[in-house]
Image (tube, rainbow, N blue to C red; front, side):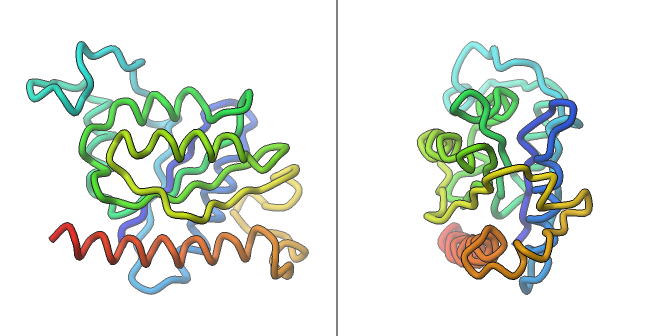
Length: 193
């Protein structure tokens, strides 16, 4: 499985990048998993303003930055989307990136990793409603991190001992969700053939 880990925040002082590294570290413990972190800060795209929905525009000619994003997503078998919760939803930059997709995620699984004062629960809920529009499958478990991420996960993506040792905490949730994502990825890859 080639796993694209999307950093869905571009703001100064963000912590979503720590969570992306945390996801990557855990994913690397699974067999046959290759990871790529996709930082939307490095893939700045124009606001979506095409004349038609990408799925209904066979004459589409995306901007170079958009095409790079589309190619990266197309090469992945699955995505882990890391998002903060902003104003009870996910970030605008993530929405813009999703809006540029057409068929790159068709029949591919997406895992959502969110953080915020309520663990990003509303961001998770909104993303679950949006991803079917780009033909993706969100897996049942989501990973929600409550509290100050910078106090529990360091810049290398390593969780503190309290988190690592809590059998009901986010580390355990991440491990279980990644195993589920791998199962969905393998099953859907076989079905796509």
